[in-house]
Length: 258
Image (cartoon, rainbow, N blue to C red; front, side, top):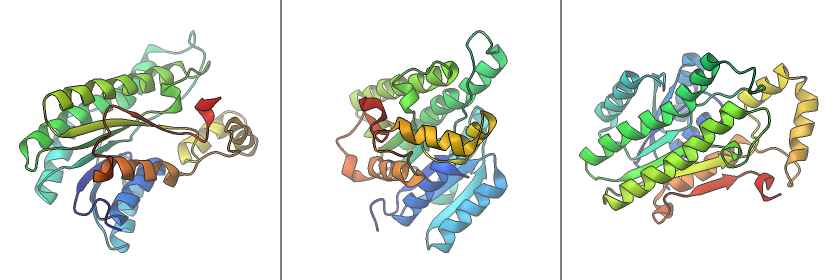
């Protein structure tokens, strides 16, 4: 129960779904967790759940597309817990559509969260990890199977998650060659049963029928659960992964093996 004992971790998009599961698991394994989101009621509740389980956590309102918000979140985390060891860039949005019908406004909005948010978080986490001893840390970027393979109706989402994948590799090489002791990796979930996926299905036909169709896409026969991804986050956050950087951790029930 102490795989990340006393590490300080920021998890974005931590109010629900993958972020909430990851924050809860990190807290259970001994980390001091800063949960951030724009869903304040759910975020406060998630932080309280960690407290009730005996962990340490705070919640902060946070728009990941806003650089000044990142500066505030990082500084508040340092003021509260003294350092930063782990950043989980989880916050994201997703929607689909035909490329000729996509608008520039919607494209830019998705990129501002899914890609700009990862860039800003990575930038400011490195600055904090460099200056606060002990130097080093782990940055974990949530990409997707959609960052590895294409989908005919998810062009903007594909582009954002593919960008996260290669940006992660670039920063991992930079940190390694600079001797910073900061590891940077991406996680690529298959379809995971989260409120975002459920809402997407509700908007595109029906939840029950959609769940059946998604289950069939995965060779193991079902979609994943949030904890399936949280276990991957925990591994990359822990010292067990000290030789792992610039890699893609695919957790997808065999989806991309086909």
